Image 1 (cartoon, rainbow, N blue to C red):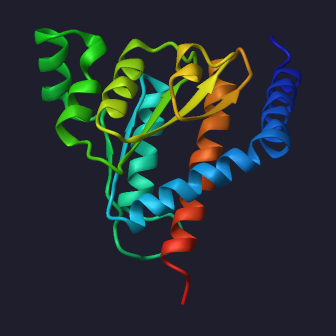
Image 2: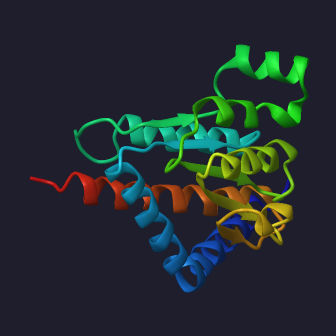
Length: 194
């Protein structure tokens, strides 16, 4: 039988290292991008969010926290996970290519002043790369949550936060932590508790 206790302790230690990295290296970047999101909302803009697999789930989680709520009742905020409409996703993948599934939606929905958040543990997801190009052509701000060495997206996005792990689940743990911090910033700034 495997040594589950040792396995669990190793995984928790790696998770703690990710949180420590965020604390030591990314707080300023999280703050700067969170302020960008607050300013976007104050100006009447919206967030478009995309990613694949677990990153698609994170995109949906992020949108749900903004449209729904994080800590308390308040007005809904406009956020769209570009990962959810199966008819659009399959039509674009079939008629164009899988790399265009997010870019076509950015072209249709994005406006000047909006923000695209692209999530990719490798930094090399072709459809997220194309979404960033589409967002830039619409004069949107682009923010990337990345892993490993940041990949191609590290050089394309206006702002990037890289979790330098080689393990997808640890990168995703870092990403969801950052997403929750953004949500806290947005909610507490735009809707101060009574």
